[in-house]
Length: 214
Ligand SMILES: NC(=O)c1ccc[n+]([C@@H]2O[C@H](COP(=O)([O-])OP(=O)(O)OC[C@H]3O[C@@H](n4cnc5c(N)ncnc54)[C@H](O)[C@@H]3O)[C@@H](O)[C@H]2O)c1
Image (cartoon, rainbow, N blue to C red; front, side):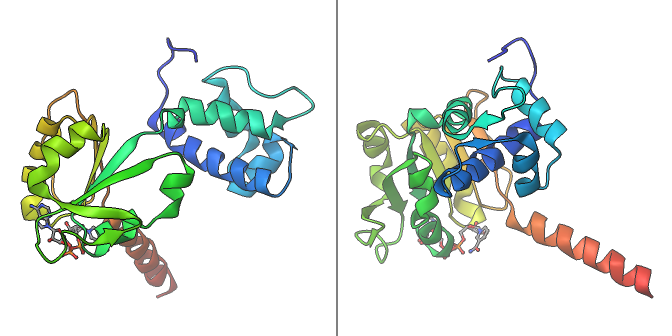
């Protein structure tokens, strides 16, 4: 990778889409794909794809295209998927159960190794082959199972407390689904997911087109 270049967030955000589309193409038996074909499948211009990939190195052959298997490996490596991160979900309610059952995480190379909850009604249940443990056992389990990433799916009022516990237990990254700003030390990577943003954005665009038709 060209490490002297600052890669934009937009480019990094497009890489998983390239990765997913390349994997689908591979499943369809496609060995070589051009940036035009890839762009058509994604709704992204071929120039954008070439520019994004060129930020990380020289991929593909001029006049031939990208070797699908090779590019999947390259993008997977750029995304760090070859590390096979161990993940834990905290809060096994509606969302936590759905996330824990999401097979795509496994196919991307993430290992779901622990589930935590505070409710006696949930502790002891098995979701996707993993037993739900008490949050009180988090410190020892995060250490013993070498957990790198904690996913927070608890009600907002408990989210900061859960984040503090995950950090002191030793995770390196947090994916937060609770609709609240969480504070973590600088060395911890945090990504906040707010599903209401997507829906509100859709509402904004729909209401604008309604006004235009008035
Ligand atoms: N359900 C959704 O579609 C959805 C979508 C986006 C975001 N969210 C957010 O995700 C979070 C969970 O939502 P939900 O609908 O799954 O709620 P839920 O009530 O179904 O589940 C919450 C779970 O967290 C557990 N819990 C509570 N405090 C805890 C603690 N301190 N430690 C460990 N576990 C604890 C509860 O026992 C319960 O099992 C909320 O912050 C919500 O706003 C939910």
